[in-house]
Amino acid sequence: MTGVWTGVAGAYARSFAGLCAGAVPTMLDGLPSGARLLDVGCGTGVLVAEARRRGHDAVALEPDPEMAALAGDLLRDEVIVGGLPDLPLADDGFDVVTANFVLNHVDDPRAGARELVRVAAPGGVVRATIWTSAPSAQGQLFRDVLEASGAVEPVLPRLDPTADFERSAAGASLLLAEAGARVSEARTVDWVWHVDPDDFWAAPTGGVAGLGIAWAAQTPEVRTRMRVELDRLCEPLLEDGLLRFPATAAFVEARVPRA
Ligand SMILES: C[S@@+](CC[C@H](N)C(=O)[O-])C[C@H]1O[C@@H](n2cnc3c(N)ncnc32)[C@H](O)[C@@H]1O
Image (cartoon, rainbow, N blue to C red; front, top):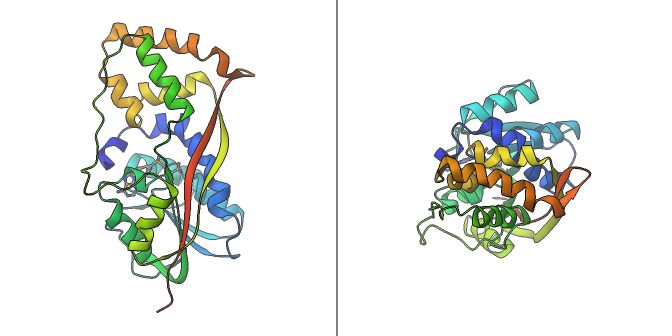
């Protein structure tokens, strides 16, 4: 599903990058100091920037060239262009390999997890977050907008059931355990995403993820109604002019056995 991420970097930076950034402290807390860290699917580069601020030797990798350029601007550094399940990297090179909301976007999550483990050093860790199958606050608002606007149901891409995995901490744990790592932590993590309604709206209108697919399926008239309905339905969620969305994700850490 890498193609879904083509041409959406600017809209992602305005919208869901802020949501995903909420998991960055969990991804980085408690790591050994000065770790060699690889962030796979780095998006706009926020995790790597924070890892460097904390003193880690962090490298960013991203398959979408436009997103990689945004991350490069933030980091003032080269971003490796590449993607799961074939990273252009040698075995065992990193103490920490992170994938923040990436395993839930790849065509072959099992092969992706194996690749994360391959590039982590023996004794190193892989840390990953995914969205769970529980409905999200922003997803609920968007569904309400679709319904109130008389929008058509979007056809969202689904993984083949044989490639898919349970969207939970247990499901993500199983992926990494099957890839040969020992799960050391598996839990949910909660935070609150505050976003300006115009920035939130950049996600559908800019083609980001399922919201972008839903937007693309609508007529111009429906799209106009959708914005009107957003402004009406978001009223109760506003706090100082920003939408307040409670967020929950699954977080897993798994350790790569020493040879
Ligand atoms: C939800 S975004 C998360 C971005 C970033 N990790 C963050 O926390 O903001 C998903 C990211 O995964 C990247 N991606 C998609 N397919 C990928 C693949 N096969 N391998 C690595 N990254 C991939 C996308 O380009 C996008 O940057």
